[in-house]
Length: 421
Ligand SMILES: [Fe+2]
Image (cartoon, rainbow, N blue to C red; front, side, top):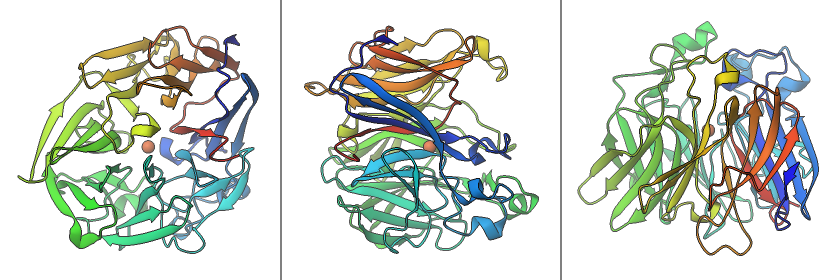
């Protein structure tokens, strides 16, 4: 280890990802969920451990997740996309099925349906409101109803479920919240039965499907939604959204399209700002940067509130995905007030993941805190966990802990001991 782990950090950094137990999967999104976690306390790392989420696919490796008879069961989750802490629980999430609960040692407890209240899928990207403690979510489906809105109370009960009308079986990976609204993204990546029958990922781009944003009061229902048409695009991940002077601002990682040629067709995403003028019914769409980047995050305390700072990881500047030694990436920090971008270079051959912001104990400014991620070093064939200073964006980590190779993954969270002991 180099540097010092700040004593104020008491909790777990947990990151999920798709690690196929058989060694291969039909698509990078379809591997089995494995969480990689570090327990930090009193300036020390108590442990690092990784665990498969004990889904049906781990106990019976012959199961095919694309087989409709398997896919339709809400327990048949790969649980591979995200992991969050809410209301004393740690939930491993994937967007087509029930969440899986984990204990504090990241062992699987089992699937959860919120005491029978959840009747369908639950997104991998719920939003936890820093003001109310509610967890706002949704679930999409290939079958009717194609979309449900889900509101979970601060104490963990699923208290509201609303059926939402969308243009068809759209793949809705994420959504947006503000202080008073949720914003659904009804975009042209849709379910395709022919692909499903061929055993491929059953989603494709549809040039005839209108792209829309739907704004609904947080306690509202389908009839309260105002829809706003936007230019065709796909958004896996918003950075954050907020209300300002009658407008709703969405900062997002925007793709021109996805999966038009195949389900490996991923153009480069870049940061855009979409501003919905609710009075005039128009949406102003502005490209903010031209550097390919993904996995946008803000401080948990500003989710749904106006943010000044957003963080992303730049994608490798090497076009050859097999040439890992010459790949590299940076952690990016966007300052919305000044328009400046800080770039924290992780070094040649070193690729980082989603930067998770953790506020410091005595924070005064929004960026007083740390950025955490795993970094894979191809030359060393090993990984490290880094804690960076988000305010200074200094290239020297506050702390860096050497680890065995950790496969690249998707999303993670800092889960303080106060949230899930
Ligand atoms: Fe995601």
